[in-house]
Amino acid sequence: MNISPEQIDDFLRLNPDFFQHHPELLTEIRVPHPYSGQAISLGERQVLALRDKSRNLELKLREFIRFAEENDALGDKLHKLALDLMRARSLEAVFQSLYLSLSDSFAVPHATLRVWADQDHALPEFASVSPEARVLMAGLSQPQCGTEVPDEVRAWLGAAAPHQKSFALAPLREDSLNGLVVLASEDPKRFYPEMGTLYLTWLAQLTGAAISRFL
Image 1 (cartoon, rainbow, N blue to C red):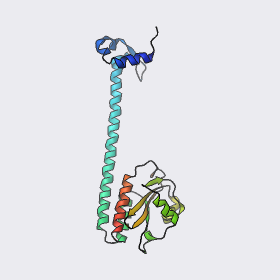
Image 2 (image 1 turned 180 degrees about the horizontal axis):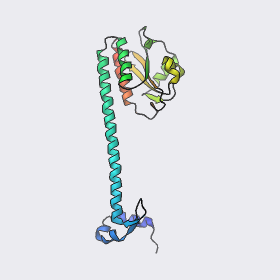
Image 3 (image 1 turned 90 degrees about the vertical axis):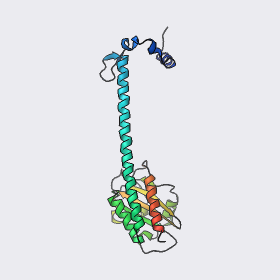
Image 4 (image 1 turned 180 degrees about the vertical axis):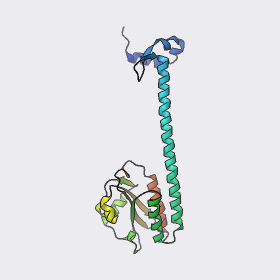
């Protein structure tokens, strides 16, 4: 009678205390070493498996710590930006604080925005935009990242526009104003579709709240 590997597997799963009643098998059964191919006891193989599992858990823990540190750093930068925006005494100061923070604190080389509101302003951020751009903003339920943007949005970046390879678009929605924050980089991998957008959402909310104070 032949016993299949599946039957052995099922039996051991249904009888987890099997080796407790037959401890001598742990040293008698020989299995290949996972790396050298040398035959070792089942107990030694189990120790190696536990070491590998421990090593993988340690790597995951280090990764979680790194992500936590990065998130803490981003939180600190957003906190500083929020204070700068609160201290701004004019719309010009709001935009200057935003651009300076994005450049210095967040290392975003190029940024701009457009606002459409119930009031007219001479600032370039209030320049007219096409209905298509407004439809684009209205269709964004959350920030969007990637390598392509409409030509009109790209043109908002001025002379630097042709060299930009990745973009982040964050919609502005605050009381009587709507708009779009645009971040750009020459690095095609800086803003990618799968990246998290929570901090971009908070950035847009802070910016919209700061602008609305003067409208």
